[in-house]
Amino acid sequence: NHISARFLSKDISKLKKDAATIFENVHVVKDLEEVEI
Image (cartoon, rainbow, N blue to C red; front, top):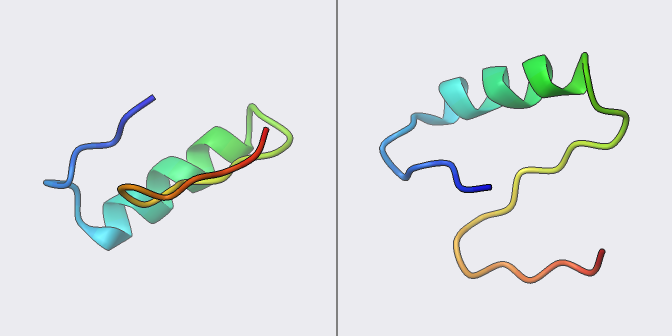
């Protein structure tokens, strides 16, 4: 999924924290970051 660049860092931190209550492994990537799944 995509998190808009309009979100502030504190908002992204809250989204990550909220997601972590549901999902075991949460990572928010930056634009153009490549991750291996």
